[in-house]
Length: 299
Image (cartoon, rainbow, N blue to C red; front, side, top):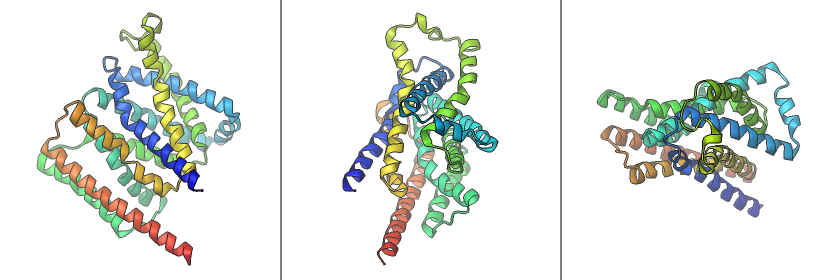
């Protein structure tokens, strides 16, 4: 059991670490429009996921997921959300808004708490209420005092939080569900590539081998952290997994400030300060909940 937990920790570190360094990959393609990079992300992810499903002979998961119109409709909605999230993340990184991307993924766990309360009837502890309230207060202060609102950060956080909410309500295998979502996005992605895209890299036959490899690597950048995350989640408690989710946005924050010289204005420091404080409360609430659960199990 201890060995399994160690494997889970390593896999979780790999998953969130890869998500954290993903901006460095997208920066290599900064001269290509974000929508075109998204197209490659969708197409090569679909191909790679299909190979994985085929090797594991899990096509039955695909059939089961598409067995009811309701599930198919929810997967279409979740595909739209994750497609938007992927595009906005690429755009923010390649347009010098990596700090906003970092803030978005710091906000995400707090939004998950709020959505769980609103839509799933989950009960919050006092510390969780305080965490959500503190985060909201930070955003309100930024809006009132500085007249700005973190639109990009909330676009990323909301799209990913609602995506997670939809996936939580579906009894669909993680990898199979992502393959279906990617496949649903393939047709509009291919249509954009064929009819709209007009950058210098559209025709891969005209590209250098290195550029084509960078573009095709979008499938690995998308799929590898997901597979590590799924494997880690099978070995660790979900509440334990929550402590690793700050790795990604923390790495992004450091890249933005120290490598790409994005400026942290007063409004951003205020918002980050409130969000970080809220996450401390959230972590304390999680630790308290784990201790309480452990005490109950020992009785």
